[in-house]
Image (cartoon, rainbow, N blue to C red; front, side, top):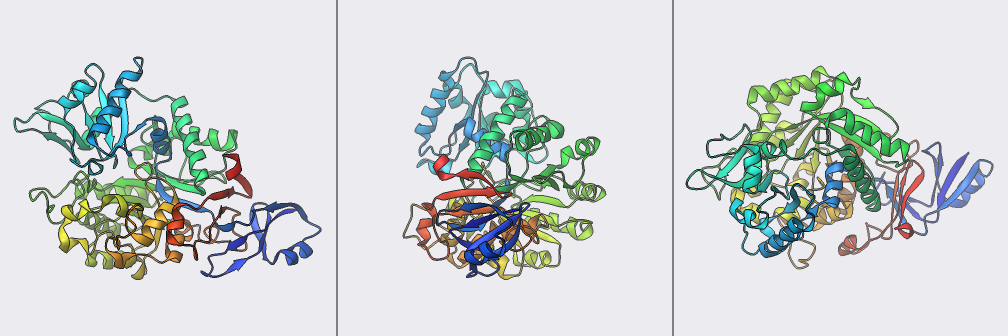
Amino acid sequence: MGTLWQNGTFFTLGDQNETVEAVYVVDGRIAAMGAKEQLLEQFKESITEIKDVAGGYVYPGFVDSHLHMIGHGEKLLRLDLSQATSSLEMEQWLTKKAQANEEEKWVIAEGWNEYNFPDEKIFTRYELDKISPHKPLYASRVCRHAALVNSEALMLAGITKETPNPQGGVIERDEQGEPTGYLMDTAVDLIKEVMPPVDRKYVYQALKLSVQDLLSHGITGGHTEDMNYYNGFSETLDVFQSLIHKEGFRFRTNFLIHHEQMDAMNKSGYGPGKLTDYLEIGSMKIFADGALGGRTARLSEPYSDDPENYGVFMHSEDAFKELVQKARDYQMPVAVHVIGDAALEQALDALEECPPVEGRDRLIHLQVARPELIERIKPLKVILDLQPRFVVTDFPWVEDRLGSERLASSFAWKTLLDEGLHCAGGSDAPIEPPGPLLGMHAALTRRHPDDKVHEGYLPEQKLSRYEAVQLFTSGSAYATGMEERRGKIALGFDADFTVLSHNLFTCDIEEYLTADVLMTIVDNTVMYEKEAR
């Protein structure tokens, strides 16, 4: 007994131009594909349901290879500053938030980006004190590697003139050595430790909002790192299990486990591999460095716009290797956040010395990669997690950070693919919006969607349409070792489909931004339909 999906154009991605008219699914997997009439005749005795995709264009289900699902839900719940276009607008929004609810103990906001402001203003604690004189205020930067806080928050965290920078973090100080309220990377954790704990109800609400939104973008699955921020491994996993299995939200989820939660995972009786049809434990997550925005990504040469600064390592060389070995002891690959070339070099030293026992390692972001480091990646059992939208938001200011000489080997997605390296596509939501079509558009144009005349930053690094679509389909499948099960429309593959209003291989590139998601289908089940929005 099976389901026939028909009345559409199904792109198999076995080849760029290969399409079929219909697909026959049995027990959630593709049993046959081809001409509609042929399948109707061949399986007339066993077809129990015929599903119509309304003339849409059907692709293998889009999968985000790197995001933070609960964090994305939090962004939907909290004050989102990412659309503020001036420091005055940010100030007004924060003031309104501070005055809105007297019962809230903290003023919390997300996503400010000084490069969206004409004056590129970064607020000080004293300016935030005027906005929120009696409540602690916390506003994370768009990269989530930095935050602004007021004096009340600093006092609660015990951060003073005498507080040293933590390993892997920076407390910005004024000329007198006083904290300015601008904290970077692990220094932000000093504030998080005194913020009100989130309860299970809040986490569940954030995850539910996130999954609903992701499905509306045509996303059938995601590789997410959430386990260290919402009351630990067990409670976070329980929230996922409740949403997926009790409420019936079908969504393919691969967990990256923060290294600090590995022992908790083990004590709970879990290990790498499949938990259910929709949940699986993948890699151990390690942060090697910070981000370019706050100048905490670790570079081999100093920042061009800050000659005394190389960025930060999150761990010493020995500590980093010990973490990699810990993953191997658990029979797990590692997923390493690595942005600067010095951090990449540190990661490669450890991966070469201690290769994975099972699965494939991941290098996430990989924004600055010297040619000789790319050569070192080639023999490794590794997948590269790329976020094409970073080109849209990080340029042109990243040119000031790196200078022209390093720029040629930065954000170089086409070079990585041409060198034969396996790449997957993600958004890093909530850092960037989660829509795969936005990511594909960025990979194709390498410019802001509103700037129609710009030739694109490093235009030689533009991807082809086929390459861009593959990042979010077969590339994401390869990242989890599921390339023989997901990422294509092929016999034996899971019935996960994204149905769009447009043919991505022939439409105008600007139509990637306006194409509708008609349906999102996970495990042969419609989880989102445009008319139901």
